[in-house]
Amino acid sequence: LGAANQLSLTLGMFVVNLAGSYGTVVEFQGQSFCNWRGLAFVGMALAAGLATMVCFPESPRWLAQHGRSDEAKAALRKLRVGETAAEEAELDAARTESSASSSSSGPRPYRLCECKRSLVIATGLFFFLQFSGINAVMMYATDICAQAGMENAELSVALILIAKLALGLASCALVESFGRRRLLQVSGLTMCLAHLGLAYHYASQSAPPALALASLSLFVSGFSVGVGPVPWVILGEIFPVEVAGSASAIVTAVGWTCSFVVCMGFRYLQSEVGIAHAFVLFAAICFACLVFVTALVPETKGRSREEILS
Image (cartoon, rainbow, N blue to C red; front, side):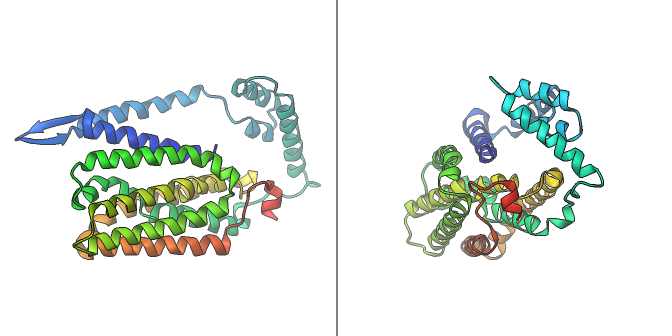
């Protein structure tokens, strides 16, 4: 389920790309443009739909940990289909554990300042998720394809997004089959090679357009099976329950701040150092991601939260 977050992002990008390229196109002075105002209003209406979240039940585990056992079981029954006896027993255990922790005789609950290693790992993964260049590449994919000499840049980008969507679906299964750490390592190496391929294409005047398309596809493939979904999975596994909410908020904020920096800075890199050197920089960052994962990130597949934290 953690990998489904990246899948949702990819689906949204795919729909917006189709709408911007084919659904909201207007003609002006003999040229075609995306009607971005109409697209923005559609996005605003969809965002307003988040107000329906007030109708959803609160997290059963959170309710149980705060001593609201009956509400927790009622929320669980709304979220599940079928028998919930086993999960209700887990909620009772969570309530008992919370009561023991709050008493003077129980173990002291974790504090965020005691989870420095987990914070470093999670923040680092989300840094590399964004500084791998994924949002810069996808936002400017049409320009990149056009500069690479492809005849139909919009169609090329649509095909790449379809591949990204399919691989996002596959990653939901791969993350449990191959393990988190291995997928991150393969992903970092693949993205590094893809960026080097793009850098070579732009540095060489004679490289065929197919090299750019192949490198873009390789990059998207590597990202979609590893660095894209796996950080979201690990984020939910390496923090104690007591601080998971605060830690997730901090790490997610860092991630989207990095996304803003990359998207705003990519154009500057293009103009100041050239697009080939920009891709070399992204390749170096992806290689650093490989080193970071190998040195610091533990394998969490098949391990309980207590085993991971120990």
